[in-house]
Length: 235
Image (tube, rainbow, N blue to C red):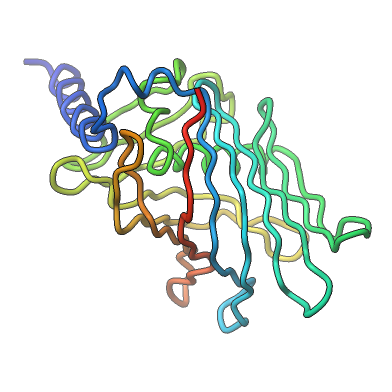
């Protein structure tokens, strides 16, 4: 058997295991879903050693095309909430941070954000399993004994995310090199997202707890951790 045939077989084996784990209600149920709506409660911080800032958020993830909008309210100050929008829509990414009623403190966009936010969407396969069967332009490739690489073939920038699988197809987490904001510039930095405490809701198996970290030269910097407090599949 040729090497490419072996790789194709391995890809299908890993992808089948991931689908079986993440869609216990069956693939047909997943194909009916148009988007998944999540509510989250957690905390985030801007730098190693910085204080954790609590937030509540709602995220809407498209299933049949690459797109999401994450909107959060941060309690950074006692009386004035900070509003954050992180999104990938129509092929473009953006990050907007503002104080309620004021002009944006951050309004970041451009090619680096396009790629980075698409990578965030691709990692969302873990908490939005219908993407596995509903998204027509995703391409999967086995790149290790228990690792799948995913990309959107309609993305000209070639953004990819690697998803590491455990026993029974359980997604343990994801990895990528993503642009990280440092001041007013971005630096390509290894990034990882982790998923824990899976539960079954409406035929989907999704994690209750998620966290994300940058892998800096001085060590891992966990900057985001949250619990998914509600999830709804919209058909």
